[in-house]
Image (cartoon, rainbow, N blue to C red; front, side, top):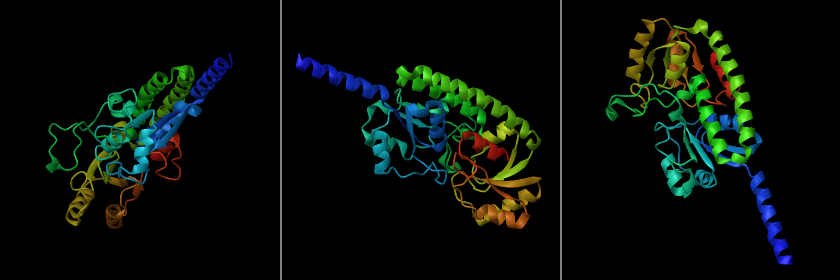
Length: 293
């Protein structure tokens, strides 16, 4: 009888621990950690593998990241080969089979959106070309809402005991998000047709969403650093167009944009490409507030 009581007590403890255990989410980029927090609340713990000041193409597969993946219940990444240089190493060396690609524990966010700039051929001579399309789709606020739908469904699948909670969080988030998207589009209406020069092909989704026109890139080819000869050619392009600004991400060097800005008097704008990229971009909502501003 005493033995049975011990077994029953142990079972109760295990059930209780399971009921209060949080889903451990490993997000490749800060925007997905922020989105997980919006949808999961206090039922999840989200960790971002990269910071806004790191180029997500080039991250070292550190032992600390391997340990994080080993403990993860869900890995959420942009996908479309953005993390191809480091994520496969983390997944392989973590030994955590439940988050492998193709399992419920792995979410490729690019599968939830319509990809732009999908090349006909992936010729490395053209630079850092992504064969599945441009992976920087988080700069279109409408795509955040699409990924939210997929992520919410995955949280409910992994943690069915809290499915109602996740659904409630999702419904509240989508209501606020849809209202915010309509407001951002109204605020940005006057920007339609605005010509810009960008550092890297990071902004095609923002441009497509808001109607901005990209007339040049500071990189001579995607992923290659700006050169003096290319910037000189780009200066002629700027002078022959009605360019209003140079645009770059927080992790990109200001040298090329500063060189162009000094010679044209046009502003060098650091637009938040993710949460935390500027002081004002503290969450997903303020990220887009700051982008439009």
